[in-house]
Each structure stands twice: as structure tokens, then as C-alpha cells.
Image: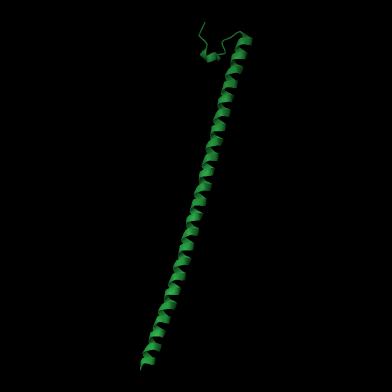
Length: 97
């Protein structure tokens, strides 16, 4: 009878051992999957942040260019006015004589 109980106990422990090993393997696989998802999310956020930074830099450059164009236009109007002896104002802005 003792050999029977020993064999039964060994079988039960073996079954629990396999179940525990399977559970541990599944848990480790899930942890690796969660880590991969988190890394992908961080990478995506970093890419989006870089795109925003690039967009802001482009917008700043365009604003600077627009400001320079506005300055150039004002300089050209002033030069034209000086060369023509006028005020540089359009006809609709000139006082009536």
C-alpha cells in the first residue's frame, strides 16, 4: 500500500509541476508581449513628438520668411516713394487737394 501512495503522490506532484511550469511560461510570454507593446508605444510617441518639433521649426521658419518678405516689401515701397517724391501712399489714401 505504501508504494501505491508514493506513486500517486509522485504523479500528483508531477502534474502540479507541469501545470506550474506551463503557467510560468505563459506568464513570461505575456510579460514579454506587454513590454514589446510598451516599447512600441514609446517609440510611436517619440516619432510623433519629433514630427511636432519639426512642424514647429518649419512654421517658425515660414514666419521668419514672411516677416522678412514684409520688411522687404516695406523697404521697396519706401524706396519707390523716395524715388518718385511721393509718400508711398496709394491714391485712395492721399489727401484730397
